[in-house]
Length: 371
Image (cartoon, rainbow, N blue to C red; front, side):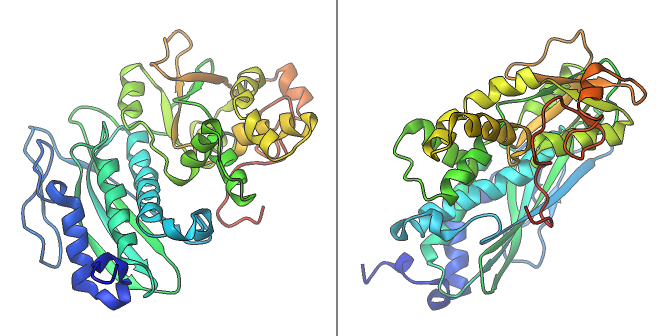
């Protein structure tokens, strides 16, 4: 359509046109006020000013930042050519929001602001920007993010798409943040939802799978457009959680982080992992793996796949887990031994603090390690 401005690239449109699309797509999100924070100034100045209502306690702010880079965290080839505008942009916006808002949720902090930095090649369709902010707005309308503002950011050009979000969260008065320290021997270890879907989706995407079946397309969505629950941190604290963290680099690696921070060991329940992994068998079968290969692969996805954006938390043994949480193991004393530990050589694939009876062949996601 020759008269459609969204058919132009960002280079053809210019920065003011890109900003106009952003403000139009955010709509009421850009100007809304909440009872936790308000934008004290309209857009147009060099920095945003957030006004935090006085609730009688010192304001405590949680900050986190993450970057998504093209060909490292997503590929344009995962979308057909007609979908590399708004559909691709929306998915990247959803995933960028998920990364950051999930980190705040893991601290039991309420999101109040996002700062967005976009680096775009000049040939990027303007419609991609519209889709990106549509995805951000969609994420911010979900339960747990209703107090969040887009407070500003930066626009620039570069050889590939890169998105950096900085998220600001507010900690409620009188409530300590949920931290990685505090897990105690005897605690149970649980996750807020199923594991491995994003890793299975990534394998299917990289294999060029068509995703004709709904049970497989949900795995693709878990990878390209995740939608984490953003209330699980507060729910875990209310239930008596002793420690917690965002589960983004795989259960093995992140369980090891809680163990090191809390000076304990973690015994993972292979039966519980196998039950979760079984839901991923259709993906392994779609990749043409034999039955033996499939069962090994789905266990790797569940235990070390990463990008789950669930909450990993420890709870006292007698606590009833919050709705949706699944038990995956228990916390051990560092000096404690068990038959499982002896059989596993006292570590799980190099994670010395984690005990697992079976070999996985992977330790989880590391952004600097070649896999």
